[in-house]
Amino acid sequence: MTISEAHVRTPGPAVAGVVSGQEAAPVSWPCPGLSPHPLPPTAGVVELDWRPLAPGDARRVLAHTCSCRSTVFELRSLGGRLVVRRTVRHLGTTHHAGPWTRREGERWWLRLLTGQAR
Image (cartoon, rainbow, N blue to C red; front, top):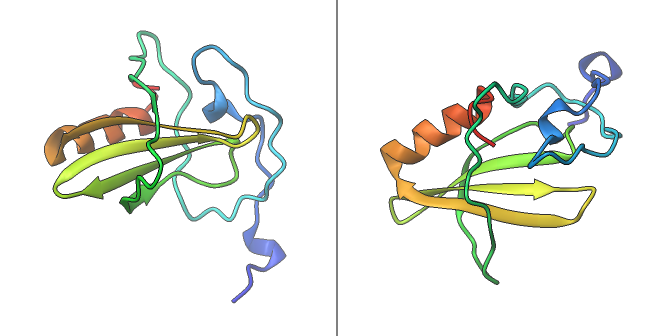
């Protein structure tokens, strides 16, 4: 199944790519409009503790942000614990924050989507 031109939006500036004060590279990926876009960081945004991924750190993806942005977030699960994976595509880096209990992880995911955490 292919996505028709009518269903693809051209995104504006990558406001979700602002991570730790670094501006994201210009967005060059089409937006299929299927996943949420994180809101811009709010005043008092909480910086998550991002750590490098261990090799072979495979986890089940529960949710993810839109792939049209240069920074993509995924909510992942393994054995009842949740982590958030952050991939900064223009830098080629992948990190994770967590692990948390399911309830804590869902709260951090919501904060990330609403711009309260980065």
